[in-house]
Length: 192
Image (cartoon, rainbow, N blue to C red; front, top):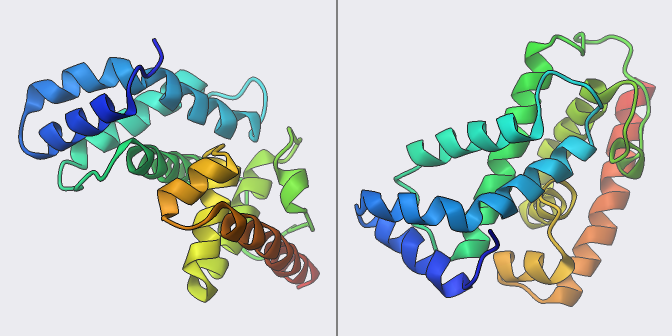
């Protein structure tokens, strides 16, 4: 089922936020396909035949969203931006729990674009991008948010602009600048 009206999603989010628990039951069928698309974007950047599947990622994010009843949802784009962030965190936690990256060991240089493709070392790539993105967030949180929404969330330039309340041109400039910054950060980390 596809989202028929962004306004209906926003209305249901606000009703849920206001304490109407039945609004969540009506909301999930409207947003499930989009959540699944976001999860698929994440998993496409991961690896084939892993134990964590797209549907499991959606369900894990759903459980965390239910616990996020304190969030004051602005609109559907805000909802999907939060969902993208949750999915990123779930995958990073999953990668860390697998113990794929040893502290101080065997880090290799990887570009942001390279990390986006299927790789034999997905956990290390994901953790390297996540670490660089955290460093970028400390330096420039808006650019980090642009990367998170575009790279991890699979959002278009226009959707990212709407989610962040900035122009599409600003998103494009931030995206280009952030990719360069992240590339440098990841290269320096690989050289250590």
